[in-house]
Amino acid sequence: MSLAHDDPTVPKGALVMAAALIALALVLTTATRLGWIPHAASPVAERAAANVAPVTERTLHFSDTADGSVRVADAETGREIAVYGEEGSGFIRGVMRGLARERRMNGIGQQQPFALTLWEDGSLSLRDAATGRVVELGAFGPDNRAVFMQFLENGDG
Image (cartoon, rainbow, N blue to C red; front, side, top):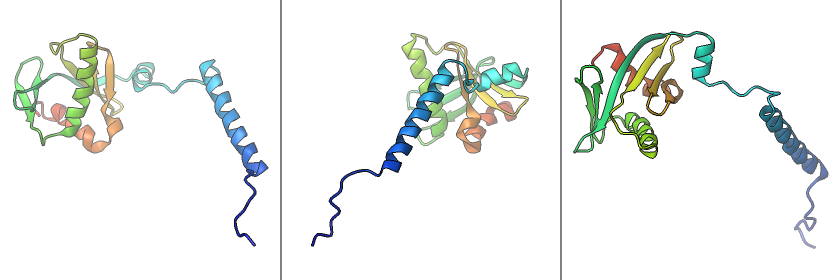
């Protein structure tokens, strides 16, 4: 007598549920593409629609130094705000690496600064006017947001 189950068929109920799930996904995708269901709005569009104004903004230059550190400077005065070494803020490195990569892909240099903006709704964004890309810093959690917020709070990092 064998204890193994020899029937390899999948229960009909499981197949019906799988087919229903696939059909629902296709219907929702099609409805969104056709405009019947609105796309998720971006924070930039939501702020513009709600007329959310900036509370404060600071333009910053980020640059790599010879020793691998990241230098942060005020774009208006050129004054150094902070330097993060190899063991410094990995979050700043990660954000800036992504933005720099996009600039390189578009043949854009480091001359144009980034705009760090605190908005009336409490959101914090870093905008690259050279590429049009905006990074919503609050999306990465309060600790990572605070790393950039320090550049606005006391004016010199």
